[in-house]
Image 1 (cartoon, rainbow, N blue to C red):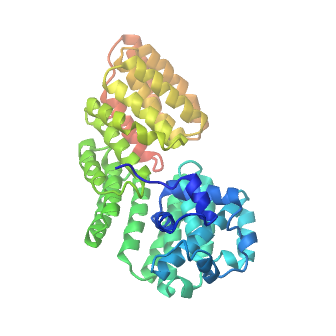
Image 2 (cartoon, helix red, strand yellow; image 1 turned 180 degrees about the vertical axis):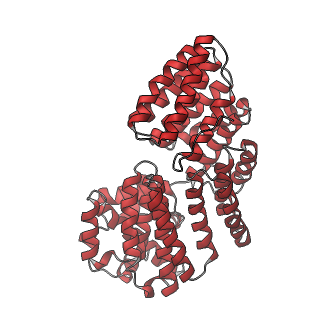
Image 3 (tube, one colour; image 1 turned 120 degrees about the horizontal axis):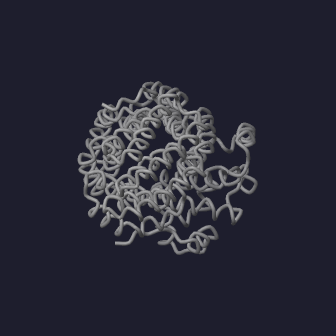
Length: 454
């Protein structure tokens, strides 16, 4: 069954109160389900329509908003209705601030208490999550504002003192994750530690604990401690299973697959397959894309490129739903890996070279380095030893410019020299050197250590 999303025309009619009562119920319930696609649409259209901006809504209470949306939110559940209203209000307020500098946003929020409500807090977290991969520095600035807002929320409006502390804990955990994506690992650790401190002081909600575990595990994996991350996630998985939350259970399984996949791809595939049977693809269509992508990616590493190609072909419509650079670069990277696995070396080299160039131009040094290893391996697999050696020499100055730690640069020289010897002596290079080098960089990018071939 095809997943349903709110159309632009329908949402515009919703804002103008021109929809039927069943349409209103469907729209508001869907917005509450936290669909990323429709959240982004709602933010953009409310911006275009000039709707629910503070300048128009200043001074209105939640009850005023509730009255305005009474016809649209016939839930029979006043708390659910209030949440929907606050969420819409928060999206509108964020839209009015989105184009400002971080310090300008902070000053306006500090001066205007109408921003201090749960809906605006959630809008900030949603906006930061949306930008996490494409603009991590901006995401950090947005979540930093969410932390400030969380610290000033009136406990009486969010369910009491413990609930207010829980909201702070989640904001700090999200800040830690945003800093991780922005490559600020010390800052990420500091924020996650604060999240854990607040979690201990709060309600003790196990679901909040599971969320923080998941974000902390992403930090642990970024430090190259894949096995530890996998172990940590077991507790989160147990919490969600006890709660009967199948979707979150699936999310954790995908995290577990990503943590262990570079070490044990076959094990990762088992986790991904189980996860895809559990996640709610209507709630998070991007999560389905991530799962299908990982299924194809690790199938290549497990020596099953034919299966990877089948998965890719059926997943292409999903990639079209996400035209952002992050998704499209990974699509082409996967295409190059599959082509190499099928021994279509010229096609693979051309595709990987394009991905490497795009990553380099966008300043994605980590990704560019991993693609470069695969491109050099592709040249070698096709017998083009001199081309591989020339390319490796081309890459080194780019790495040196980026201030990589000395062990990382020394490791690349090991590959470069091995390729030069192979080209000069027409001897095959050790094929496992590429895999060991890729795993080395994944483990030590943020945690420097010496590269050892044996």
